[in-house]
Image 1: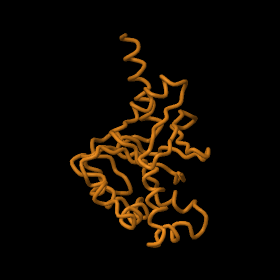
Image 2: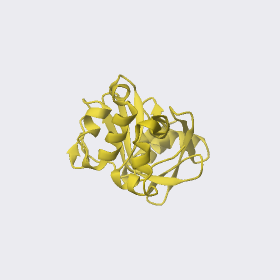
Image 3: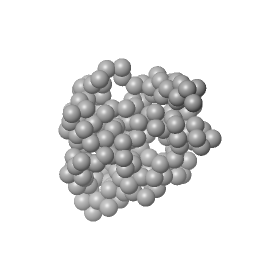
Image 4: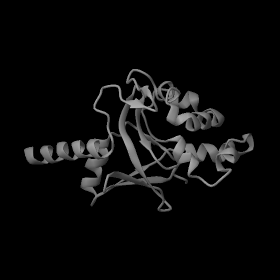
Length: 183
């Protein structure tokens, strides 16, 4: 049993090292400290790397939800991730008539509960190297350990990476990702 706990601890530490986990209690994301006493929205609005995500959350009317008690796990795409989308995609999604589509895309990045990097590692270890989580949107996101960290995959096979893991919030946890996952 001790060896299982050591293996889980070693895996969690490897996730942290491979995913860019900040060693501080309040990691910096987008040039701003993230405080575990603040909720997801209160922290995200301070990140220079997440202005597009924050604008999308506001346009979708999800501020109150993501400020609520949760807990939520948010796989938060950076501005650079949104820039990888085809030209015009973000502008189109932000239009009021596309609110349902925008909400679908955003809730595809949210998993109910507080899922840490150690939880992902443990679930992957128990499932032949792949951890799968159901999103609030109703789809699934899969995670596999690869060269340079954890890979996130959507249902269509598109892939990204967790670049900063375990950004703890009062109502959940954020994992920064480098790709927008599309349902």
